Amino acid sequence: MDYQNNKLEYNDKILNQKEIDFLNLFYEKEKILTEQQVADKLGITQQAVNKRKKKIYKKIKIWEDNFR
Image 1 (cartoon, rainbow, N blue to C red):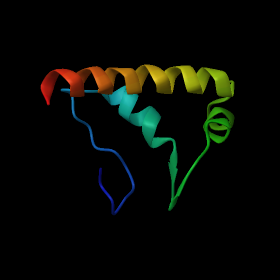
Image 2: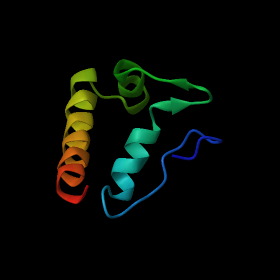
Image 3: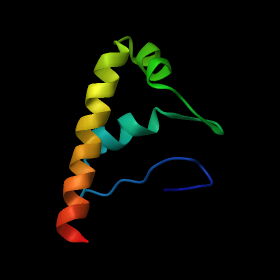
């Protein structure tokens, strides 16, 4: 993570650019947004944001379990 800009950096070994961009929606200035706030930004439901976030976290967990 780039702590100066509070943005995740692209690492194609784990996540694709679209997934990184999605996670970066949770960062706004110096605060972390809720799933509902991100959903409002995207015009989708909080449940859809949660489902997408869980899918990404599962992908990270699988990568960690296999490559640590």
